[in-house]
Image 1 (cartoon, rainbow, N blue to C red):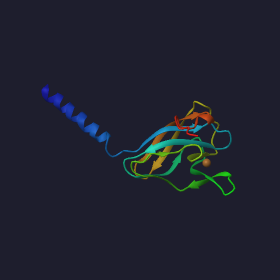
Image 2 (cartoon, protein in one colour):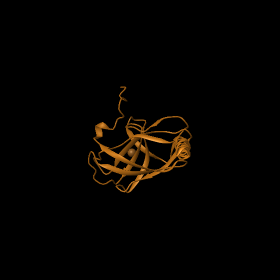
Image 3 (spheres, protein in one colour):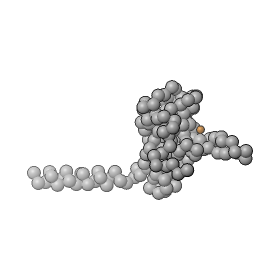
Image 4 (cartoon, rainbow, N blue to C red):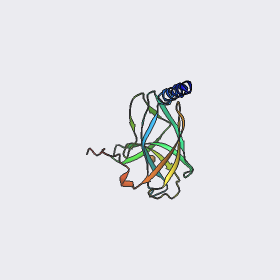
Length: 149
Ligand SMILES: [Cu+2]
């Protein structure tokens, strides 16, 4: 009896140690703005103990997913351009939000607020990560507590 209990304890400890180890990348606050046109923007916050890089993403509800950066041209007009990848330095929070970087779901299906969409992120080190991302009102895409100006 005593021996069995000790065995269980040892197993628990080793599982816990494993959980905090290799797979250190976390994605939080993931959300998709309800599309008003052919594309939809997805935002999230990512942090990793070790440097990683987002290589791409996919979802069954869109033809393709691009990594976009919002830029302002010399005339003050807002535009976007596609990035090949998105770097996540070690121990640095990277925030994708309106007016900055985002994922663009190209040729997206009609999505309504409250719907959950499967999106797979492809990380260079962390590998494939499957997310269930909620569709929100376009006005609600800003991260909570992030209104500085
Ligand atoms: Cu875009």
